[in-house]
Length: 198
Image 1 (tube, rainbow, N blue to C red):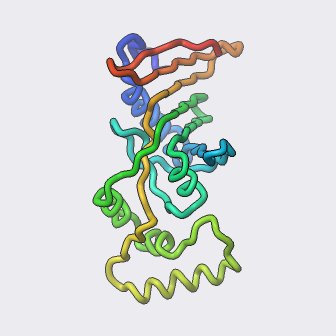
Image 2 (image 1 turned 180 degrees about the horizontal axis):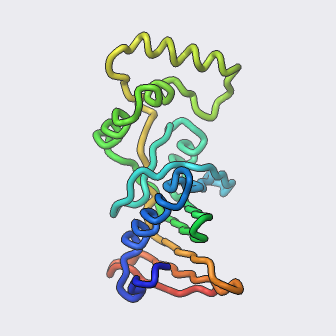
Image 3 (image 1 turned 180 degrees about the vertical axis):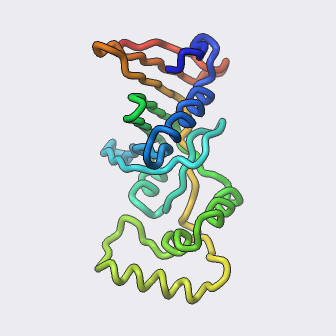
């Protein structure tokens, strides 16, 4: 952890923002990438990488196709976990919590801030379902672009989700495997902090 942090009073979201800022200068690509773990109502897990686009009091937010495997699992079991791993800094952050959806206005604003190509790709992708070949996908994107020469309409299934930070754990590498681990848990009075064995 950064030595100047006061662990008795620190807000875990502030710590996370500091670590993310440091990772953005140290990591070669996508410092905001995190492994997202979801599961079915029967507890069958699934994990994949997502890009976390905003962090606020609602949680750690990303955008995706609601009809994808992760979207369907989030609808059926709206609890998830994220894991950020910044190898160059030897740090990790784990987040666990309930999942909420962003308002349509926020999703629209973010969707239209993306490149036109990304918007077209999201509009035609039937994410997680079988695709005959790449050529078919490219053709669908080209045709959709011709049909919508102006603004690309955001598909209704393209949504934003926030993983609430009910539990946020920070891990920092230490010599001789004496790592630092701090767990912050959300409570009615704010945050409780516990140092964990490595």
